[in-house]
Image 1 (cartoon, rainbow, N blue to C red):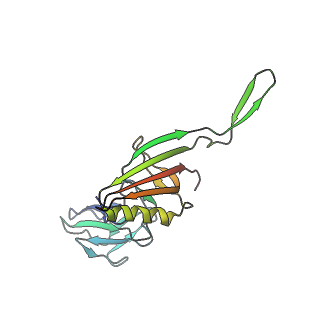
Image 2: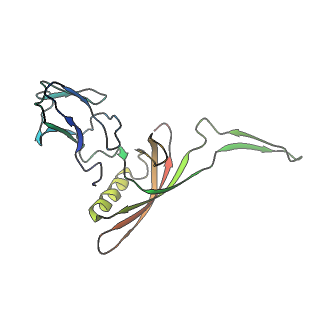
Image 3: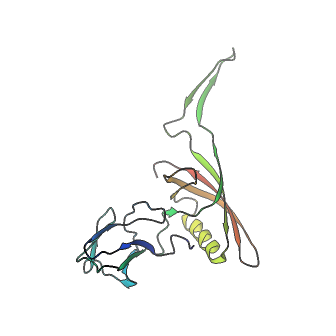
Length: 190
């Protein structure tokens, strides 16, 4: 299995009638057309406006219905780093941010610091058998640079969360397998 931002993502298989499909990412979630994205029909590059149009929400509509059995794919391009769907071993921690006032008689009063006061923090371990996948994952994290949030879906829930990865380390064996440890922090409004 290759990294989702390097591979071609499936759009669908034509039935000779349907003309529109919603683009989805490697996790199956609807996405807009990536900036450098390209559409292919049976491996042949399609031309925007000549062969198809695409809405802001990522619905691809072909000028005419592709023939039955034609496989439609999306190549998201090298600039596509919005989502990461690679399985990993993980542990989650949470520590609510609270305002706390302690009084001399042992009484304590707490209040949440804002509406998103309980972000999730994850310690992840990716075990990649292929060195190229390890290099690609490291390139993905470097491109995000610790400051660009991306969507990530944990094994604990079906919905993605926006996270930052501010640090990672890797162990590469001479034979090729790569173990990468990373820390993801949930962010809001980015």
